Every structure is written in C-alpha cells, then in structure tokens.
Length: 279
Length: 128
Image 1 (cartoon, rainbow over the protein chains, first blue to last red):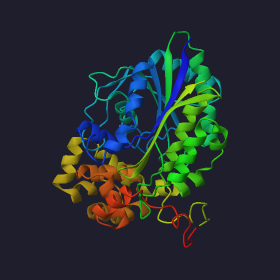
Image 2 (spheres, rainbow over the protein chains, first blue to last red):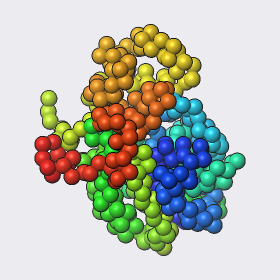
Image 3 (cartoon, rainbow over the protein chains, first blue to last red):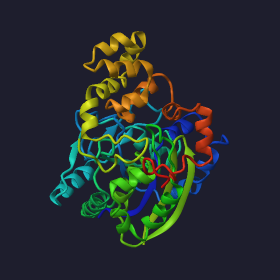
C-alpha cells in the first residue's frame, strides 16, 4: 500500500527561484537563506519519496478570475513551468502521478470533500520553487508530483480547519492506494508577508516562530486560527499558511521534527521551513 | 455599506467579492500579459492595448501610471498586477517599495532589518 512517510513545509517566494536560476545563492543576501536548506537536501536525497503530494497556490497563473477552484487536484501526466510574465523558469517539466492522483480525487470526493479535477495546467513558482529548494537544478525532477492547488487569492480561502480536515482525507485516500509507494506531503507558502499597499513588508517573526513551534505537537490549535488573525498578524498574504495545515493533517497525530529553518527576508517575505516525520 | 471585520487593518485591501467584481476586467487584462505576444503589443502602444479591455478610464490611467495602490483600490489584485511589473522587468520588491512610498534601497534595508514591525500596524489609528 502507498504510505505517507513525512511532511515538509516551506515558503515559495519567486525571488528564491530567481536566485537559484541565476546562480546567486552564495551572495551575502541569499547565503543564510539557502544554508538552512542544505541539511534538508541531504535528508531529502536519503529519504527520497516516489511521489510528492505538493500543496501550493496558483498565483493568478493557471486560474484567472474566470475559474476559482477552492481545492484543485491535478491529474495530468505532466505540467509545464508557466510563463508568469517574464518567461518560464528554466526548470524541468513536472511529471505527474495520474494513477495515484485520480485515486485520491475519487476517494476524497467520496469522503465528502468536493475537489475540482484538473487535466491541463501550467505550474507557477508556487510549485517549482519548493522543488528547486529541495532538489537543486537537476536535468529531471527525481520525483513525480501531484499538484494540489488551494485558492488563497480570492477571499475567503478555505479555513484552517477545513484544510486540516482535508489533509486527513488525503491521507486516507493515499493509504488506500494499492501500490507500494513512498509519498511525502508538502505544504508550501507563507510565512508572514504582505505584498500590497502601504503596509507591504509586514513581518511578524514572533507569530511565525510560534506557528513553527506548534505545527508538530499542537496542530488543532493552529487549525482554529481565523482568517482575520492571519491577515492582521502576518500580512494579507500570510494567509497562505493554511496550506501547511493540509500537510499536517495528512501526517500522524504524533510526528518527529527533523529540521526547521526561519529566515527574514526573501524579497518581501519571511521564509519558514520544517520537516516532520511520522513518529 | 456594511462594515467588514478587516476594515480596521491599516494599509491593507482584502481581495473579497466586492473588490473582485470591481476589478474583473482590470485583472483579466493583467492575465493577458502572460503571453509574450501580448506583452509586445502592450509595450508597443499601452494606451491602444488598454482600449481593447472594458475597463474604467480610472483603471486605465492607473495602469499607465503604474499606480498600484490606486489599482488595488479599483479592484486590482497584487498577483494579477504583478503581470504588469513583470512585463516592465520589475520585481515584487520594487513594487512593494513603490506602494509603500519609499525608495527601493530604503525598503530593502527595512526588510533586511527584519521587515515592517506589526506593532502599530495591526489596527487603524491605534498603537496596538
């Protein structure tokens, strides 16, 4: 049977992708950020999954205001890196896992979560930057990926509680798949950031660090955080952190923290990262 | 208009139903800039390109002036507006500095020093 072995969370700032793509990772501005991912890359290479179930948000790339799915699972064979307005990132095409993706779609819908199913989609920095952070610049990505897009652009996004609950449903679905697969669930986005208006640049390190402290041992508390608190305390785009709760919901109640990293800034954003293994 | 729970957050526009309805055509224009040929057409004659979209004149002026705060008030969402400054070859950091009204170097310095402190920035007109 397929099994979930670990959950990872990390920010997905576009400037991180640009730093990797342009060979700037050793520059003084970027070096401390990337240093915090070195041991993660080693760990990931040693614990490489077959499939990454990658929770992210589309940034007005595949989904305009014509269609705004709250939860969308992508079931295609492959996904091209998107042109977000300055040409596509020079990264490999992302290979999907359609057998497992379709199984999850069917099973999760049967558990009363009404997913949108996507058969054609380009993927933006929200999905490709986490892959670059963990795998660097390979010719081909070493894992297959199921993109799971969450609306956090059009207010309101799904609640933290709903995200945590859907994570649990995704876990059940994955564990009922007849195939010997090692699956990791990644939650991406966050941490504090506000990209718009006169309050842009807001960073709440204290709040972010408390979130990192609690995501392993006390996720129920985090699932109860209302949207208003995310917006007020962590900036309008900090609300992306609800996606971390999907990852957490897909793990065991008890987890072991392998590594964490927190760094300010990447462009306008506080970068958070954590690796949790099922205990 | 009924008050919203996030109305008391300073310097922040939540992209809710009202904003989305107001900004639909503006944001869809932004989406069109994800294609290289549309970017070229826009750059060649911004005014003419904008005329092709059923936006308000105010929205068109906001685009021409790259006045992102005005565009947000007119229903623009930052992830859509990003296609405009990406077309200009500018970064989110550049845009954020512009929206906060400081030179990019000052904005960068603030971020490197830990970002904008939430203290005094949680509620309109209140220190905290």
